[in-house]
Image (cartoon, rainbow, N blue to C red; front, side, top):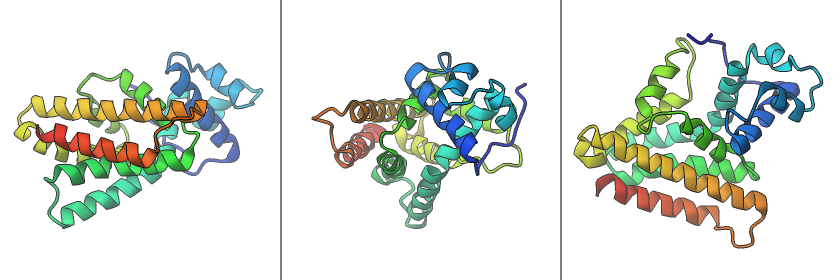
Length: 220
């Protein structure tokens, strides 16, 4: 079993450089192409043991990247989920999709040029097609730590209750396809921004299309 380390939530400048380096290299090369040595060199560290020093292990670094980068996204998403539940919209496909898409798009817009969507796609590449249950088991490693992903997993459960009339495994598959498709689309937008494509689609329009298409796909 993998060693459980407490993810870094308030990183120092040196830790930020390593996390940004890891995020960028994973986004561009995948996890197999983002070795500890490559991450350390890209961050400008001469000491090849910097990752172990600051994070305990490469796994500790990867966990920290997720918690650090997704904290604001999931805070935004948590507020939206609480609001839709309070207003009885927890079975409203549009409200559910908006709670998934809007915090994601807001974060990417603030980060641009961003690597987070491509990092997320790389993370999902190592997971089963219907990834949610495996992710839920994985986060149980953090017994006494508030894991930001729990908010998103709760939202996915709400989406599954709506998709395909809640019939499993079809509902889980439908949600997995929608989530993977949106992540891939956001990743393509990210790459367009990085390349400075002249016809890059405005993120606000892209997000609205993702909400609309996702809403239809949930209940079709």
